[in-house]
Image 1 (cartoon, one colour):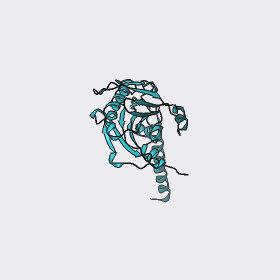
Image 2 (cartoon, helix red, strand yellow):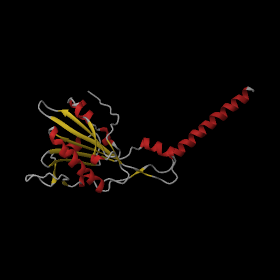
Image 3 (cartoon, one colour):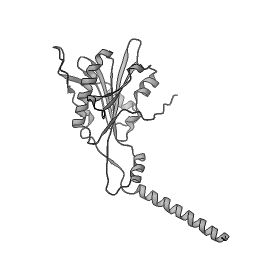
Image 4 (cartoon, helix red, strand yellow):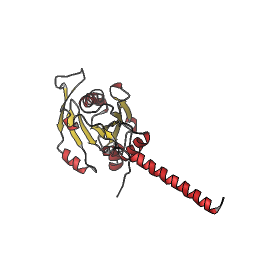
Amino acid sequence: MTLTNRFVLICVILGAGVAAQTGLNWHIHGGSGLQYAELREPISALPMSLPSLSEKVSERQSMHWIGKTNAHEEQIRKQLPFEPDDLVSRTYRRGVDLNLYMVYSRLGDDRKHHPEVCIRDVTGAPEDLEARKILFIGGDEKHPVQRFRFRTSFSHYTTVYYWHFTFPRIPRAGESILQVLHQRGSQPAPSITVQISTLAELDQLEAIETDFLVSLDRSLWKSHLPEGTVMGCDRMPITLLRR
């Protein structure tokens, strides 16, 4: 093969490669961006009164978990490193007090929060590893919740329940798996982070785990979450920057 023929062959190969790359880029960027399901109702519309499922009711107990918006809700909103699309910070009570924190982000920024980072690593609170456990709300393995317990003062432990909801994408006509994979990487799914914290003693946690968690879960699925939403409690890789 002459030098000229080799040069022509190299040009043909390079041209084919550029054309293939251009065609691939055109294909994966073609069409509209991914679309995801929307909340049916804002999470801030969650009822202030959630029904208790417990049959054990004393004269001093209500048949409902009664909520109250925390005074520092707006302060929490302003301190977040992203702009939340909806946020809830409340105290609920029915014999035992608990704090409910929920944040919704259309960009999935809420997932950058995790108790292991925000409580253990940032504040230095030691974790009681024996209390760590994955619970399944109502015994349903598709509804997992991660339980943590941290020593937050000399005389108190804080128990934390953490999970998140990830919204489904809306399929498009004629889309390919390459388009879906590329756009998923550049456009995270909307999600909701839920965190419940309480200073309750270990023998008081049953009321939260078998009653409040179930009542909250039912209310969210009934009125707020779109069909196809996935519930999980795994942790995203998070970078902690110290100054």
